[in-house]
Image (spheres, one colour):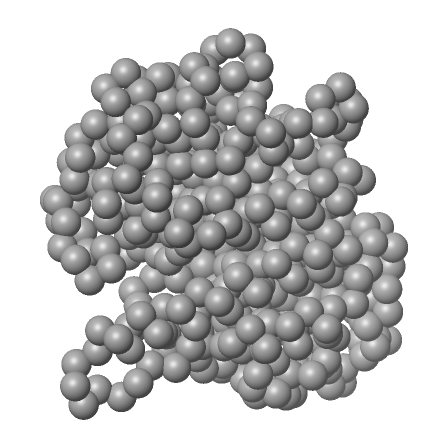
Length: 466
């Protein structure tokens, strides 16, 4: 019987498109199935074609509901995958709103580009449609945290709280092959210690093969207290010059965290009573899902909710659903804060706000998350003199401020705390979900802590469990 293997098909030496194929006992399991984000042509090619036959996959194990981990599931289903998708209950609920929104964006972007295409060019098809998204959610099977579940083919899965997003999980696999048990741990995206709302990550389960994210390897985040002060300073300074604060934010997790901080700043009198708009139907729906799963909250948030049911700002903050109301925000001339998806400025309503405001120096673009290479968000962080937004070339004059401390990813200190106890237990560590310099920084530190073999696999590389 062949030794179990893992082939890294996504988020290998990059941050997007998480997808890892586990083969054992004649079965094929997929850890995550995320969208690759980057140059439009490359992203289209990567996301459209799978390097394996989708119908041959027996099951998908989903770590969490961020688009770079779940966003290509409807395409997998459309191309023939009919097996179960295992995830936590909160992830399933977030997945339902996430994929419906993603499919809507796919359809709308294709329609927009088709209206703009040159005569004679072939029409552009969406990567998948809303029907594919609905079919995907029907295939979900929920497994609560810390309850082992048999998947067949001699494999047992256990989800452990990753503290990164509502419902996010580390994946612990016990694989019975060749007469003995082998273990694999996949961290998914590891959360941070001390962020509000969610519980801190649980201890990382030991595994002979440890697959860990490395997004912020070698880097440390600002303390939460300093982050709150910085957010307030940006909002106040922008308001003083009569501008808007535009915040590209992932609708899941990041938006709720920013709303939490703004709510606390206003309650404490540290932020003027500025109009705040969350311009994302997905964020509205996601926030409702957050309210349905208090079992994922930390003790402080549970207590705050008891004392202040308006914690997520549903009375103070305006949640925008309609396109017409979103367009009206561009005609506002008074200072305000607009939070809109997508977090990397690649799609969604933030593009229209940037198009209408990026050339005005009164405004601020506040970047609060990692920006993958070649995305519009990365171009803004790099202060490119010109950018293309919705087929228009624009000269950014708005101030661009980066507050990376909002990230819900572990930093170098978190990695030491979470992974350090496994030195001597993990025979091999594979670092994924990180650019090369970040992965190499984490690899050096892990080797110093006593991990014997640390690899940074390339896309398509296969590693044996033993």
